[in-house]
Image (tube, one colour):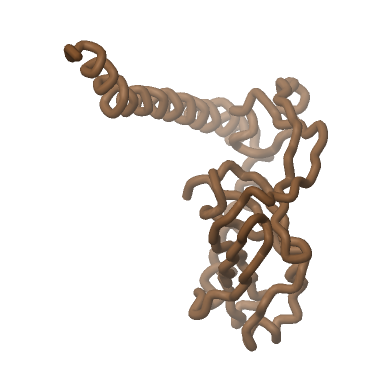
Amino acid sequence: MGMFNYVKVEQELPLDATLKTLNHNWRDEEYQTKELEESVMITYILRDNKLYEEVVEAHWEEVSPEEKKKDDNRFGLFWDKKYVRDSSKEVWREDYTGTFSFGCVVYGNTIDATDFYPDWKCVVVGGIVKELTIIPNYTKLPSRDRIEQQMEWDKELETHKNKMKCPVYSFYFNNYVKSLDKFGWYASRKLYSITKLIEWIRFYGIRKLVTFLTPR
């Protein structure tokens, strides 16, 4: 899936006839884009036809053993640090000129409803929004498959919670399943680092070495 950036829309969005019937609060929606500068989960804001960037000052802190124990997530024990925001400010991006698209997902509430995946195109010149249009023919899918899948996951989660009441299963899950998961994540991270090193050697390191050794 890759990384992305967030977009907050604090102004009116153009909607087609179908989206207007949803009676949806579009300003509270969480929009995402992979086309607005480097995708590193930065938050941008569209307000009064201007583009702003939320500049955050933050640091990483060690996760305490007590916090790890409180985390019910199966993978919670794998993370040793947490991201802590210190402060933030909004900066008008008058230096930015470009075009990007952003979108969201609006789920239907019933099994017979529809899930909507609308996208918008935004043209910015010198930090000023010159064009904001909805992209036609966006994706629409029946809500049935998603809701039925969620019901199946909820059923499996409830079954797991009931099994955890058994000391044998609880011991097996906490000491065997979690340990294998942790080892798998550790191994995959190491393999990823090795792969990145090999890519660096192939595409950059060898080229630099050949350039250095080639007579001028």
